[in-house]
View: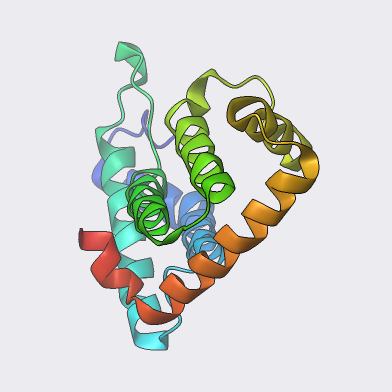
Length: 163
């Protein structure tokens, strides 16, 4: 309906009634899920920026050309996670942890080719890529999670966003 609206006033009305709340909720959920902001002021700015970006993407979306709208968060989250994985790679010390983080990076780099993506499937993929047995993989993942939490505590995720 938004795309087919004949004038800006009609588009604005459709956006306000049917779309805006969904964009705001999507933005909020993804900010919380990815832990991008703990500061209320940063949260408001990030949410506003993301909703604006989604609106601009909606306006530019051309279904006739087969274009697909994409989420601002997917781009930001991928960049954030790649940076985070590289930081963790530097911190891991034993061989199983190194193999595990390499498997995580490989999995992440090939995420589009995966058929199933749930917690169990990810564990199986990591086990196959790393060659570690379930116990070794669990221990390595626990260590990697500790490194992740340390990095999150020490880094300002907004700075990470820009890198």
